[in-house]
Length: 454
Image (cartoon, rainbow, N blue to C red; front, top):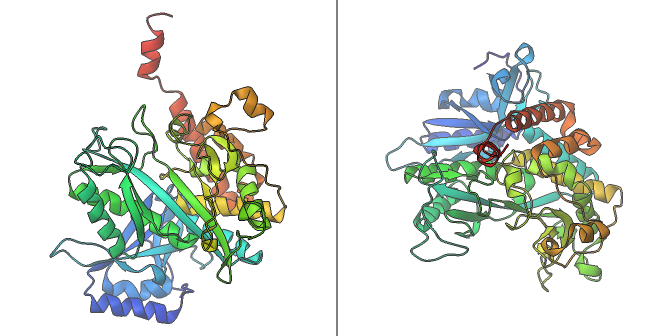
């Protein structure tokens, strides 16, 4: 840990900090985990003892940022993690285990200014832009899918169940129940769960929340899913496409903007019951979809999922019923005005949720600010159209590889403004390196196909 001069950097409510200290004492907490993510969304953590918590809550804890992917170089590496009192939770533990707390941190520089390389700060800045445009809440509801395998060394499945399976084939039903109990124990509300389409593929859906809370929930969700699986001797993965020939894992993401408790996407007398703001927000998602792809699908493997034929949408269009479109607008039901929302179906669960939610919000707000016009919906199954038919209708596709996606991202003025120069340039560098490392590999497929005939 770094030794950094005390400056009383915390900006949270002092009473909220005192409440954390009271809970630590009352619940006999042994230590508190401080969490934040690196640029790619990997969870980072260190532990603080109760005796150090008052100073940590008021002033943060220093650490060396040069060892964190996407953070500063060693000559300017001093960082401070400021715990957010609203995120204090008691982590699930086995009977007789130590009581462990958890807090999610904002990363700042030694002078207390927000660190421009902190993904949580990027989302905070997006929310500030939203508020400046007259909205007060960006609600997000992601649906994370994942696979359960027998161990981390292969892809041997636990079951051969299919979509909504509720038979003996679904060997992980009890494991899902335990996972839900653990998620609810840390304050994450769950709506429903089920077996997904592929063997050993599952989905547990969180109830929607504001974007910052949901990003915090998402990184917590991924850890708890993995920990409960490990407890049962299994391995959970959010890898987008671990099984050839089967559906990959997506993170369909539902979005809506609110002001004064009212859904700003709904309009009773407008087409599709979408307000002008709702239509422009969706138009922004579509207009910038190719630029965003490297954020919501950030890995080489992500583009093995984004191919036609496996329910992963790749064509940039919208619809009410058509699940082959990139954006779906769930049909309006009288009395459900508050539920009007846009569902983006292309993100995957291995993204960085802070950067992804920020990117999606900026794209939608850009559509509103620039009055983008929403094209007509596409109700035809887009997979059944020929390339010429899609071209005639002006339908473009998402990038086909991470290399193509990062080129689109690198040329995006919107993404540079959204992420700031530090994250934008580091993200381009990281992802280009990942693509270069991958594309020079020699695969068994190439040897099998070419060696004996060329």
